[in-house]
Amino acid sequence: MANQNFPNPHEFKDIPGTEGWQRMYPYQYPFTTDDAKRNQYEKDMFWFYDGLHYPEPIYPFDMIWDEAWFLALSQYNTRIFSVPPVFGVDHRIINGYIYITPVPVTNPKEIEARVGPFLERAGYYYQNWDKLVAKWETKIKATIASLEAIKIEPLPDMEAKNVVDDALGESKGYHLLKAYDELIDLGIRCWQYHFEFLNLGYAAYVTFMDFCQKQFPDIPTQRITQMISGIDVIMYQPDEELKNLARKAVELGVDGAVVSKPTFTAASAELKKTPAGQQWLAAFEKARYPWFWVSTGTGWYHHDKSWNDDLDVPLSSIGIYIDKIRKGQSIERPLEAVRKERDRVTGEYRALITDDAARATFDQMLGTAKTVFPYVENHLFYVEHWFHSVFWNKVREVGAIMKAHGFIADVEDIWYLKRSEIKDALWDLVTAWATNVGPRGPQIWPKEIEFRKTCMKKFREWKPPPALGKAPEVIQEPFTVVLWGITNQSLAAWAKVREAKDIASIKEFTGFAGSPGTVEGKARVCRTVADIRQLEEGEILVAPTTSPSWAPAFVKIKACVTDVGGVMSHAAIVCREYGMPAVVGTGHATSIIKTGMNIRVNGTTGEITIAQ
Image (tube, rainbow, N blue to C red):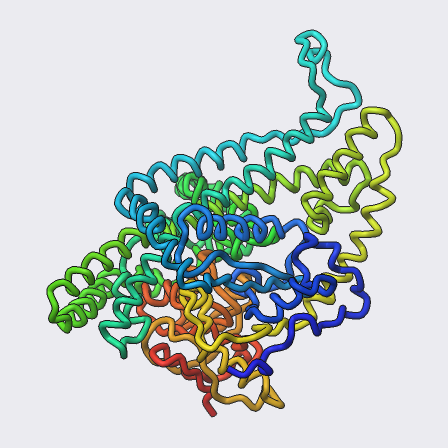
């Protein structure tokens, strides 16, 4: 791989008008210019844009989750489970976009030394997986309950008299500081739990893939993942709740009222007029908790509001299902067909193994991969969706207090401050309240926020390159391949697009073969979950990435193409569950393809053709 295909990470100049943007983020994140050793390390590494998690520039406060997984993933790899070939994942930022690089263990003796502890510690988790996951679920639900219980209260002009009568010895100013500390601590703790099992879950996949690729050198990666498909997980439950509500609307004869109004408020007012409508609304309300805490995006951005925050979103999806039911069309995932194909593929490859020991290894590794699969999907609902959705709203309560005291002009301005800056501002706020003098913050933060808003606007106009630095001779780091779809082949494809003089002239390009099959049809480019309302039956979805809240789209489309992701990305997994083609990790699909284009998607080879 020629290094000239990807820019040197240090060659980027600040976008005019954003000079000094680096102060918006933790000081260790920007690429280094004043430390020769660190600078050389950064030049020697291969960095790729994490568009899987960050399809747009990241706000200063929203960096909390990047810092959280920076720590959590790496600590489990390096310090807890001692994963032999890789320490952790390093992070950097350019113009608001996150770049990451796996940190390999380069010394063969050190790799060998790490094998023993890994087998012992990981083995304990694999052998007790179901019992430990049940314990994890108790921990994460308790963490969410603690988050929901946090009270963030305005500061009173005068404390209640019971502060004196009960000798409480604490003020509402102290309680505000304490509540903010608890809020941040719970966020970091949640992500500690997030990665307790996740690396091991992916390691089980990767180990099984490695075994299969050695046994069957020509096996396509998606054939291996097909062997682990057809397993039900709770991450599909929010969508199942929508389907149930669509069925119930038709059964009760209120489907007309449900679909006739553009907003939930209007539909609710209509439904309340009849007993059947009231019955449906009661079912709707019951489904909301916890299942409507699913995010409308990845959950990584504060503006990825949940269905509970915008009931028009689930209402629109219910309408899609009602329309299909009325037409006599199925809204079910073709689970039995997927399982039948899964068992056929598994049986055919298993029959090719003639050695009894190898066959036993195949069975054991496949069994482990199937065991870990539910956690790999289910943790998303608990963390990125339920926890994050509640968390964002708690931070908004902090923002309301800061706005009331003149620190910010709008509650939504709080996202332009780092979490450490908010803590400093709250200390300014409560000490000013305590002494009855004017705080300093109202003179500092509104001006700084205006600068940061300018930076964010310019960052959105900038196109981040898919990769930086030196591409390795061979990309072997397993998570890079299965999650992000980064391979030597995909890098070559990205470079080819990057070198094209006119992107409009590109008629063929490739990505990662995510789900097998070939179809041709009209493309629909959707950049957000709101865009999927425009999808028409039988179109091909083209998106930067997808998330669980996009589920209703998959009953309408016949294929999916994404900019980012590997065989274990959301789009690839869901397409395999629906038995439709997917090409993921294309790097540039949303730039090359325009809505209305006729395209051919080959999910078996990863090829995409823009038809004449």
